[in-house]
Image (cartoon, rainbow over all chains, first blue to last red; front, side, top):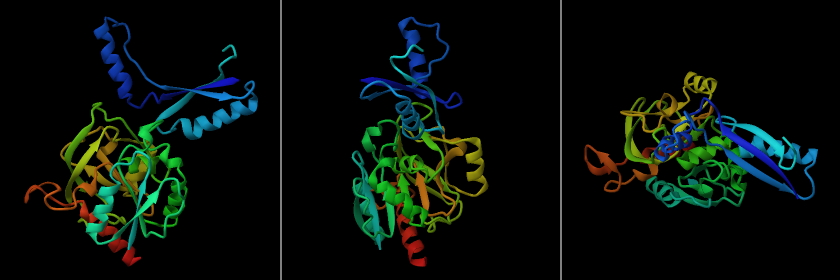
Length: 85
Length: 231
């Protein structure tokens, strides 16, 4: 079984209230080096057999049409989980 | 006149929407997410709630349901469609309306009686309001923060397609205080606040006539009756 990873992030110009809340909580744990936190999503898409170019193309299609909303989010990465990045 | 009310898994306000339609003098018809049959209705309401538990993004999975294929084609042919709260999110994810709703800027769920200005009273769902009339209906959501590209907002403003603006305060960080918008044709309207919860005296919002006397929401549903009869 192969796996394709799709990563989606809120656009830089869009306010990310979840990341902001995490950023606010970190100093309470004594972790105060991070000036900003942004929170996104990681999808793992499984296929039968190895990851093919066709499967990667379908992953790109799914990423643009369903897994992300281009008004507020960017697809930042699509890759074979087994491949060396 | 028959007005359809769509139920998705996780829809909450379908019964309230049906009640509002009945009080306005029309017949509510239940529509099911898994069927593409609109049952010959004259208009459709997408009610509030948390369809599919807000998984992926609010309204995103509901937008892919079989019933929405029919709603999108009927809306493009002129059928009046009103999306309330989660229904507004579904309309945006279906691309019937531009923009997207994200988490409230102050990161809190907001529940309040909200003042709105009716900026556009020529849509299928706002004809019974005065121009720039201030109305009060409940607002209750965690992700009501309207965002769109600068070009999309300029287009909405330029074409008079902002239908409702928050008055008094902006409860969620929405761009340009936008509470509701319409499509170019004026038959599809989406808004975050809930007209169906202010339709019967004694069970409505605060008003000059008493603490629960406000029924401004009823005129959304009487408007569509007028629109459809006139068409």
